[in-house]
Each structure stands twice: as structure tokens, then as C-alpha cells.
Image 1 (cartoon, rainbow, N blue to C red):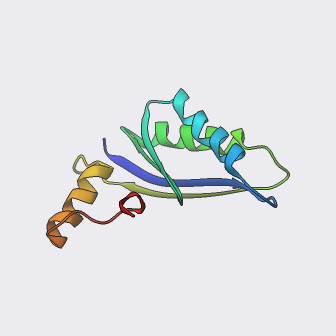
Image 2 (image 1 turned 180 degrees about the vertical axis):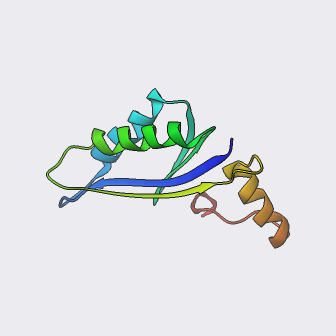
Length: 105
């Protein structure tokens, strides 16, 4: 996979956004993407930018509300294949250990 992105979609509302965020994440299932949700967003991997953009658009549209805020950061590495996991592995090599995660606590 060559396109990796961080997607965050949220309604601008008071209280918990969890049910609306879940709708955005569920919308990704209709596309040829891999994803992993974390506390700050969802990391998405796709073979091409078009599929990634379609998935991000579907996630944005899946959220109900008068106002929806979407953040999309894309790393489109065009000369080599990469994955989100390989990016983390490379950081681990530099650290000499696995990076800590929230689930380690």
C-alpha cells in the first residue's frame, strides 16, 4: 500500500461524539482500505489516492449534525510502497525498542 493518511471526523456538538465517530469509522468498511482507529483519529491505508479520498468523503458524510469537522493528513509516497506499520517499525529501530502506546498503561 502506498497511501497512508490520518483521518479525524467529528460533529461539533456538546457531549460524547462516540456514536457519530463510529458512523464515520463504519463507513470505511465499504472501501478497499485498511484502517486502525486510535484516540485521536483513524489511520487509513489504501493502494491509491482515489480510493482513500472516496473513503474519507464517505466517512465525512456519514456523520450527522449541523456542523462536521474533518481533518485529513495524507502521506502519498509515490516511489516506494510503505505501510503505517512499517513507519512505526522504523521508529522502533531508531528507539531500540517498541514505542509505548496507551494500551501499555
